[in-house]
Image (cartoon, helix red, strand yellow):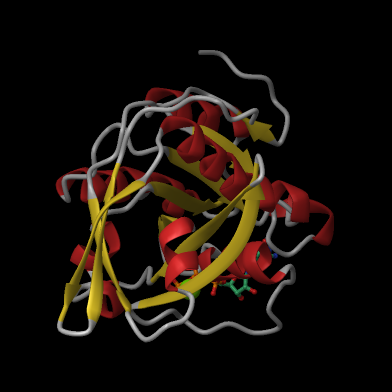
Length: 238
Ligand SMILES: Nc1nc2c(ncn2[C@@H]2O[C@H](COP(=O)(O)OP(=O)(O)OP(=O)(O)O)[C@@H](O)[C@H]2O)c(=O)[nH]1
Ligand SMILES: [Mg+2]
């Protein structure tokens, strides 16, 4: 599919249902009922170290650009509760480590039961764009279904004089890999809405694609085990 050249570009869409998911919550929590009703979408953010994964997730969940960041070790979780078509959904963002030494013991956890993947490169660093192929191979190697939506994000667009990755090159890559492309900046507050769109477009697609149903609620040693099941559904306006 050919795309226009606006900052947020749709190159293609994914479909199909995701695998079943099992999670546990503490019985003692009075919010059990809420837990059962609130769907959680797990979105992982992947890419080279220093491309701005932490800043992008911070911008989405906290609405600001952090003064200072350090290399992520393992993973940082950030959550945002959003409402889509009257339904409250928890978007759980996994901000992963780009440095090999800080991620190797965690990689299995990143990909387990993931609902969507955000691949990030730095538009001022060609190497971070070239390395996307490796990140995609890692993702595929962890049995992430082709039906799990993926988007591509070129970050640091505010550094206009230093851009190394041309938009048309990124667009071609996104098309070839069946991904949406966003070119944006976690730093520039005017791009805040665009950063939101990265995650909201995924949440809308997930909501449209499937309805996670809690099938079984069984007590296990004071805990409740919830099993979610998926079914195809398509009524999201996004
Ligand atoms: N100019 C500019 N700088 C940015 C932007 N996003 C992040 N940075 C800077 O890039 C550096 C790295 O940002 P991080 O978000 O920590 O990078 P990361 O991808 O999380 O790195 P790892 O945790 O090591 O994988 C920091 O100095 C940020 O201030 C952006 O949009 N524009
Ligand atoms: Mg980080």
